[in-house]
Length: 427
Image 1 (cartoon, rainbow, N blue to C red):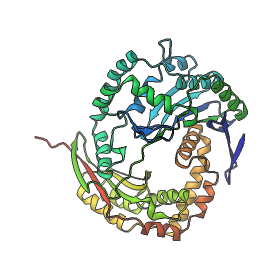
Image 2 (image 1 turned 135 degrees about the vertical axis):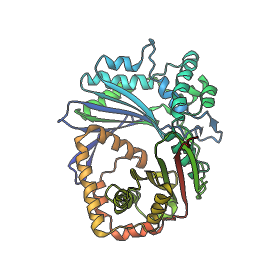
Image 3 (image 1 turned 120 degrees about the vertical axis):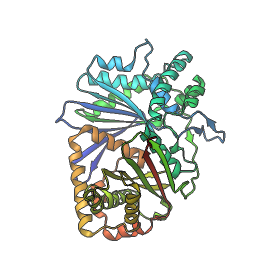
Image 4 (image 1 turned 90 degrees about the vertical axis):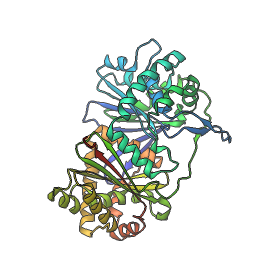
């Protein structure tokens, strides 16, 4: 077992590649009683086309398959559900599907061995049949019909449609009604058999555990599984145009005030020779400094009564950096103008940089008070970098104002998409 020392944080992540197949990451905290376990699959809603064993043939499945399988996986062979099993122990189990991966997670305070064993069992033991698939279609269609009619959902996906030409991030994670109706048991089995394999998964366990005992438990469980041969599935990669699709779009919804998303799309190729971890940290700092809770712009807009809410984030999607500001306002035109002006003059002072860095380090240290936050952070790092970052604190401390200014100059603010969700007009 490998012990990954997190430099400057006095914390250790334990790592084991179980049976030389599934990565297992663990963090021990004896101050708590509970254990949080996450079993994650490298398969998300965007993975609709893929090839196997290095062959050129692409298989295509309907959108929403990842979410469909998440639903089906909770059914047990005896007609009960995994939720029923965990209710006996007072444990909490759930799952979620994102664009990029699917995660089954569990929180338990007792019978840890039984709880974790069953997490591996119900996720890695398919009980699909045609009748079950057809029955679940109605449940999923009802769920998505309610969600996709929500103004915020339309707002979110419309904005992504304005940003991306070929990337599948503009498509509903659940798929559409037509996607669900067209899904077959053969589609389900094709995806499950090829992606739900320990070699395409990873597990994160945080809380009051003995890492060596946990690794042994997981190993013994996987040894009992009769798994199909791994076919090394490779989702299709799309070449996305560097330009946005639409610069400005308006839609209406049942909202009290207008909501606005403003995003700048920048190819990652312009940031050559910049450390990947530090690039992500720098743009978090930049967005926070210019549009965050204590930014001069937000305070000014709040003081003038122009906004009710403003949030900012950066995301790395495929080969692109997306910098996004989201606002709620009665005066969208005025606020859009202000946000655009701030994007033109992105800035950072030495004093602000040091303050933001120190704040981030404090947050990093305090994160280890919460086993769920630690678990989620490990998941993010494994998905982003393929492993745990053991020197995140050092990366933060190494960032300089000169480096910040260099990356700011690489941002092309002309490549900006604005989406406005207006209140419905009264007749």
